[in-house]
Image 1 (spheres, protein in one colour):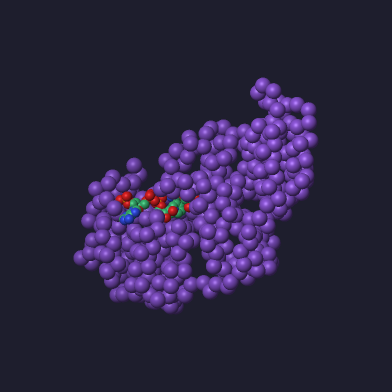
Image 2 (cartoon, rainbow, N blue to C red):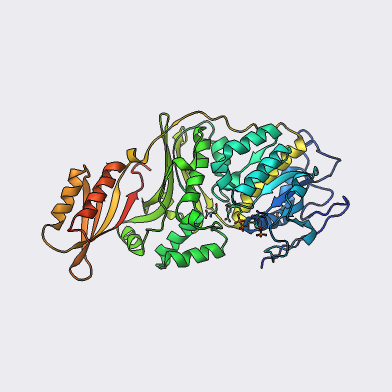
Length: 468
Ligand code: NAP
Ligand code: HSE
């Protein structure tokens, strides 16, 4: 168990965690800081959830309190923590009277200015976020499910309540990509975002590459590290990455993107044989989330892809994330860092808490949320990729000719073929194609699979875009 030493602060008659910030001290900027209450009064926040990320937030707030106080220009205090089970043993020790199972004690408390939603899930999280915003409280959330699926609803509540909404931790863990796209790159026309946006699957693929273990074993380790979602299918099936690329695309293109518009394949079909073959051919397998804009058309997809070993994305290992951005005028750039885990995510959450606390202290007008322009959404069928196929075939005369014929009839041009002996009279055939439209390739795969000279289509994996 990780124990965070927390001290109680008195004086207000309210139970609260004065985990950081002495009564006096902390830099003030007399030109810009306006106290929200009597001088020296802390900005009070409530945490919704006390799991992996909340524990990280409490630890970071305690450990880096001087830096945080400096950036806020005053003190922050944790006044309430919402949990499901107040009796549960926690990763951090907190005074039991801070815990509540009733969100209304938080929402109706006028002294709580910031609500930090770290419960996960949708229904309870969405209603709590909306209610907090409508009550005029700043909201910080790491919830990509809500921000990807219901951003219109939460922004509507933010506008109505006149309160700000911050969601840096919803994408990239500790990598500040949301703000980079919304602010640092605001002068760019973004053409493409290609990211490793899921730490759990990147951890699993890295472990399989380095140690040759199974997906199931690596997933258990990822869960022990606190990287995986409560239901890890969201990681394995690419849904988490789809939500994240949808959030980034909405920001980058100022467009109303939705995870339902993201073509999605996860990593369950990736085998040690594919990883070994990829390495043999100078590639690394990554779960890529790619979003492209051409004129007014946006296409989003998540799928495993072979990345050349010398590409910066290939070096992104373990639970690290990276976002490779192509735009005008920036050209190509990459943001990289820890993508999951309590403390990494806490880095982004605490940064948002600092922004929210500044808003509270300055009494500024809350940002109204994004203005979205309409775009068209492209279909996966129109995407052009190179493909890798691994087939099990009988090792006899005429087989290659039939397979090549099926590809030819569907307009698929073959770049290379490698045949190696397998068990018995079988052989393994690895084919790499030239760039081809997705729908043509899918038709070719179906036809090849029905040939009586093909025992099994073992894998079909795309290569990363040539101009990445
Ligand atoms: P977690 O460890 O499962 O913790 C969730 C916490 O929320 C638990 O303390 C739980 O209470 C509480 N909770 C859940 N449903 C609740 C409800 N209906 N009412 C009251 N409390 C409830 O989750 P986590 O890993 O910290 O993730 C939190 C959020 O951050 C999620 O949206 C996740 O997607 C996001 N996120 C996570 C990471 C990461 O690396 N873990 C990174 C980025 C973003 P009990 O303990 O009493 O059950
Ligand atoms: N389960 C997520 C991941 C947590 O593995 O990336 C960070 O969002």
